[in-house]
Length: 169
Image 1 (cartoon, rainbow, N blue to C red):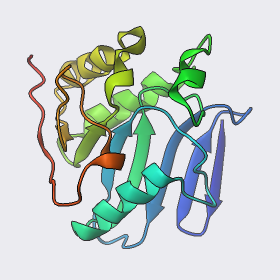
Image 2 (image 1 turned 30 degrees about the horizontal axis):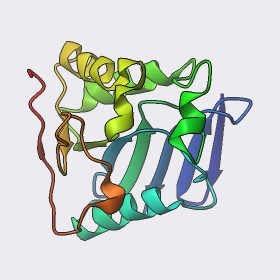
Image 3 (image 1 turned 30 degrees about the vertical axis):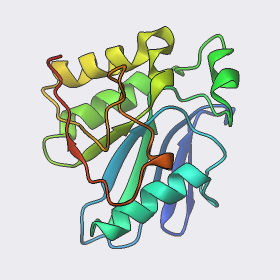
Image 4 (image 1 turned 90 degrees about the vertical axis):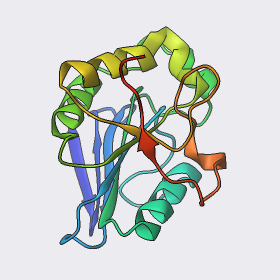
């Protein structure tokens, strides 16, 4: 695993950099960050954002958090969900460990899910919800799609605020 830091940005990748496990940007360390659990990483890294990470950070700043931390239900880096779905192992060898850690501390931090419809691939969204249930975790969303998956935040208006997801359904 490779942990790369650029000032207040940090990214944790697999050694081959095909999988990104965690991306954080901290601007006010005295305030807790907002955690996001998205679909899969794109091009954002320890140096630059992609549009989704930019939107997540903007929301975290608007809501008074001290940073933004992004994890994903699939760790394989791809700009198109179809490319991610075509991979033999889109989850990544260490990704469930990172998700379990997040679920374990989700009673103390705020976590917003936004993996969208593609969370149905490999039944991954349901598996991640099971991890949160096992760890007695809590998780929120900005919107729940008709399919039951938490909507991706890229196209959701900034006026929407997170609400708790019902993990029992």
